[in-house]
Image (cartoon, rainbow, N blue to C red):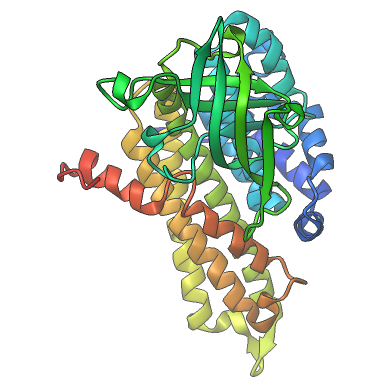
Length: 391
């Protein structure tokens, strides 16, 4: 095993640090407080080519792999963008780019991949439903045949950036539950252009705890027309298409958690060295030093496991165990790091003038989405340990 980092990965880290200096925590603090989309950051990432990192070269991208994706996300988060900057990248890099690369036809690739690479457009995904939650197989949103196309009706929730996205990917049923033998059958994915401008689409913002620079929405679809050109891949292949992006989605989530945890720890360490109480820096107290050290050790373990998962993915090898273990360890360590960063800052950590309270809010969502810590443990229990399935 060679743990030496390649010159390309070092270049990526340096580039992300440069961008981080352009958009320090104060920038993100203001965007979160005003619930304003970080257009300047997104356009800068696009102009530098980073939003197109995974897009193949023939469609205007760099054609990089999962390990480069992990480093890009981790470093841009750690350099100051926090969870907001990292989560912005998930939809474009994973749900948009990878879905098109794996299952899109040539016309869709040439039309949509450059759009995802330009740094102006954000991609949105409508997957979760109010009654389904983590069990996407219970999807009830229905696309019913209508001539050569379909009519879409149903409700989706937690569709982030749908109100500003020129392209939305929707998982829905094209066959009813009573028409299929298995729940995994009868699901299809469709693209919908400019959903906010479609008269059959209603988009309502959800007021949430954190990541407020990105609007998250509930969506209602009423007789929305879908053409054959909107269909991703084959009809009825939607569930297998979703499975193809679950592993890279978890890799990116782990990268966000590692980056955010390190951002919080580095900020806490700086404050602990500068803040003096009872005649010495508060960082000299083991009651504060040890929790930060524990979180750091756990984040480094998560980073190593996440890089292994990304490497396996790039080699086309099974990586389900690694991505779920990395996701669990990374997000739990991130929560610990952000929680103790607030504690180190004392009363100031609870104020809006410092960034650690915002990072704690951002860290909390990583234990819920894209899969809860408990669902990751379910996977590990069943597929790694060989215990009976619990759900």
